[in-house]
Image (cartoon, rainbow, N blue to C red):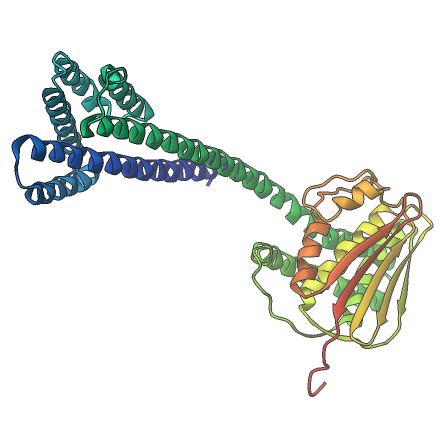
Length: 417
């Protein structure tokens, strides 16, 4: 499916969800006004006709339930019932208080209100305007009976309900815009993920190319050729593994745990440095291994560990000028193992260090041989490290290279090893 279609469908779903939540808030507002209107009308009917208030209250509950369910299943009927009750309210109120011509205004008002009641907040503005205009004649009269007070209660209730509705509506509209913006950002990340695949597969492809060139130079020596072909096969297997691991990145970033098993970290470090020796030689760099122990066990995932060291070592080679030394150091302490990858490159500024492990960030320093950089390798590396209960930090000054220190808890050697 085309990526733009995916984004459009996602935005459309978000908009539909927003409309549903908007409608739910409008239903709540409508029900509050309906409830107040029904019982206010029936209260005045009770006063004017001396009918049983209990009977009228029961009738009010029935009518309100009709409005409530009608609004969800038969909206036109619900609007009609609401309009009729509002008109009865105006007529009875006007008749009892002898307002006279205001009754005709009430009829006209309801004629306009009924068709627009379900068309957004302008309907509620109209209700407020109608209430204020209708009750305006009482403002300057010396009348303090219950109907006068009821008028202001109704007007105030409608006004503050509208204010609350507007605030909620504007708040939700802002949330909807933020979600739409987030969807667009996710679409950008999807495009960058394609670059990640190219980024992570490029290293083994370069290794294959390097070994093929070596084979061409030493094709007379069958023993060496066989060894080099074996390394090419290893690189192909590595690419296959990387493809599977890239698909797992989302799981890790969402906080899902990975299975941690005892792994031997020195063996993994040696495998990775062997993979990069050809590339380092091509750039006239020397890889120096310094391991305090021949065997160090930790709990982790061997594939993710391999990718971690590949990303950091690849960067060290990428940014180191010719003739420099890159050190790979492993030190065992009482409860942890530290791996340091030390280069003699251009260093990293303090500003760049703040965004070093963030996705898709371009740093000031540039690769020395025009290699590509997606700005994602270290972000993924940190996700992998955290997933294995480890830490990664960078110490660097401009012009003095960089030291990447990775620390993991020690693990127990598996039984039967």
